Structure formats: structure tokens, C-alpha cells
Image 1 (cartoon, rainbow, N blue to C red):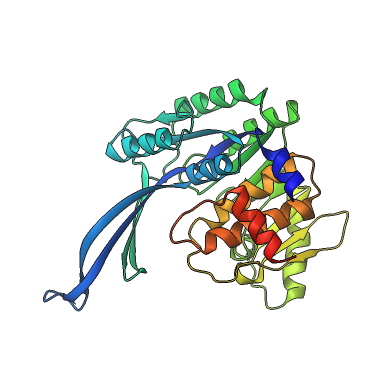
Image 2 (tube, one colour):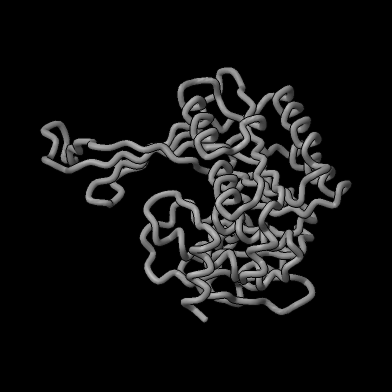
Length: 322
């Protein structure tokens, strides 16, 4: 594990995806509203954090990699807050493209006594313009020659169109850059022949249009997805059950979770794709890369809100489970 941690330092990863802002508002429940049977929360503290693809970039930086985030934001106050956070965390802002009239995605979580009471999402999921798409491709083209890795974080917020997916994968193939994808619903099966494709269990089930009533159903669905996607590795995360690794050349592998106490799963998927892809880019076997990612997920699940795991924390988790 120590040798792997050394190898990932300095790796350059392009993070292409939906940039988001997470807002956390902490308060106290003092009484029930006279207007409706709902609690009144007196907000005492507010904090902004990076979410979505922004959080992936932050996770990569926490592991010692060099992240180059590419994505689209709006032009209002939330975009300014997001850019300010990028600068605070020493992340490159040159890949952030502002599209006039677009909303910057923000997820606001209101918490009382460390429990989430409600989440409010403000977002724009309409497709970006052709001109913005061309600008995104220009940013990718400028960075791809020196990249060690491409991570695509697709939250279905209007960035990853079929054209952008196809052109991005073409560039990665031409420059022999490995690709890891964290998909959602739209264009799920458009990510052909990537190195790592990482849906969660529910996403896999929904996109196949079937319900897995047994492990046999799940494994059959994974085999079908491998065939449709023609990816090297299909990695399916399954909450407390850990993750499953599928490939055409070897038997399915199950890695149980290392989380001792799951405090908050917010952003855990971002951490998994970051650690998994980064470890894989060093030439590590996928089993070792997945174990590294599993320990990273265990670390962030023990923290409140979207968080990162650094190498020392992952190493401590690894040593605790040897």
C-alpha cells in the first residue's frame, strides 16, 4: 500500500464532469411552525463545500495527484463561490467554463442535531450549447497530451452529451489515456470500451430495466452490461456490501466494505472513483486499486458531509484491517 501511495503522487488526471456546490446549514429545532406541522430550524452556521466532479478533483488533490477539472458552471453568485473554493483548495480554475443564463448546481442540506432534515436542489439539467461543447473539447484537447488519466463524472446535469462522450473517448484512445467513468441514467451505455465503468447497484439495475431478485440476476445483469459496454472492468458499488468487480477475463470478485461506522455516505462515490482510477493509472492490478478505493470510502463514510481521504488516513485504515 505504501508503494502504491508513492506512485500516485504527481499523476495528472483530467476530471470531466458536472461541477457542483454543496451547502450545509446547521441549526437547532426550537418549535413546530404554526403554519404547518413542520419543525422550525434556527440556522446557526453555514458552510460551502465542493460537490460532484469538483469533489472528485478535490479527492485527487488530497491523494497527491494533480487534478485538472473541466466543466460548465453558471455566471451567478454560486459560480463565484465555487470558483473561490477552487482557489482556496489550490485547484485549477482554467477548465471552468461559464455559460450565460445557466444555473450552477447547488445542493443545500439543512441539518439539526447532526441529522439531515431536508435537502434542497437548485440545478439546470438542460444540454449545454454547441458552442460551450466545443469550448469543453478545446480544453480537453489542450490537456490530454500530458494526462495520465481521464475521469468522467456524469451526474446528468446537461454536460455529457453523446457527442461530447464520443469525442472525448476518441481523444483518450488516440493519446492512450485510461478512462474511468462514474455514470448515472442518461447515455449510460454510450461509454464504450472504457477502462473502468463504475455504477452503483441501483443504477445498474435501473439502466438494464430489470430488478435483481438474487445474486444470480445481479451477476447476469453485470455480464450483459460488460457485453454492451465492452469495458475492461465493471465495478459495481453496493453500499454496506462493498464492491463487486467484473471483467470478461476473470471470475467476479467481491470486496467487502471496510467502514466501521457509516456516519454519512455523501460524496463516497466521488472518493471511490478518484482513488480507484488513480491507483489503476499507476499500473496496479484492479484488485489492489479497488482495495485502495474501498479503504478511502471507509474513511469518508466516517465523516459528516462531502469529504476527502488523504493517504495517511487510507494507510491507517489498511493497517487496521491487516
